[in-house]
Amino acid sequence: MRAMLLHRIVDLAQEPAPLAPAEVPRPEPKASQILIAVTACGVCHTELDEIEGRTPPSRLPMIPGHQVVGRVAALGPAAGQFAPGERVGVAWIYSACGRCDFCRQDQENLCAGFQATGRDADGGYAEFMVVDEAFVHPIPAGLGDAQAAPLLCAGAVGYRALRLCSLTDGQALGLTGFGASAHLVLQLARHLYPHSPVYVFARGSDERQFARELGAAWAGHTDDPPPQPPQAIIDTTPAWQPVIAALACLAPGGRLVVNAIRKESKDREVMAGIDYAAHLWQEKEIKSVANVTRRDVRDFLDLATRIPLRPEVRTYPLEQANQALLELKQRKIRGAKVLLMDFR
Image 1 (cartoon, one colour):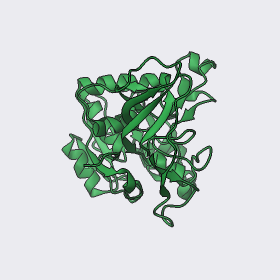
Image 2 (image 1 turned 120 degrees about the vertical axis):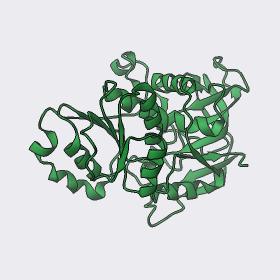
Image 3 (image 1 turned 30 degrees about the vertical axis):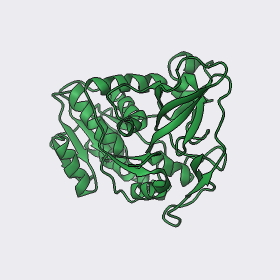
């Protein structure tokens, strides 16, 4: 089968084509696993974190990709939840132990045995992949494969971040950075909190214009003051400076939710500039988002179908995965990027 392989950790600024095309054996489903014939796989900033070593793969070579849509191609001997030909998806959560306190309390995202698709097990940058059927999600009718793919991570983790904001309708929401996740959160927030203005902070003028097109009440540069202090801000950037800027404009008692699996280390000294009175006083909070649960994914897919919520996507053939990743690194973003196995 065709696949794109990561063989070693690299800096994309120095090596812009980190993935190598390869023909590899098709995996066989064991026990309760199912074999998925992949049709689409979203390209996520977390793949950059894997490739550049901020959250490195557990082994190499590795097939990345964790926003996977496809059809059931074969069943393991103990699998029976899905039928051959059924359309399904796989998200960032590849598996969890199912036994620890976190798993028993519906917090499997915090399980010490959490395994990530495309980081701890081969993912969707390939024609086929295997996964335990317990971590597979039915894809609702009405969603195209390319549209469904970014909902599995960018959408689901954005949904989790929005829930963690504990927002009340009418309170202002801020979004720092405006990539695949934030453009979905904006649309979701406008549906769930119709009286809450959404303010977008983004470095690029194209990103700010895109936010306005999607209904942002205001869009400015990361350091610009918004019309009023937001009660909650979701940060989706890989950098530290937006965290400082967000804390400075957050309302008293407000919450900053950091939706990033890692932050780039090159500017971490910026955090030494935190001033207690300006950034943290008046009971401001900082909360991180760690992974997603299966319930997050399924609840969000159901909600996205009912709204309906449709991501803006740009598609690429599998062999152009490096181009899509490089554009993401260079912040050439408008919505989400998706690889198609049968590109047309």
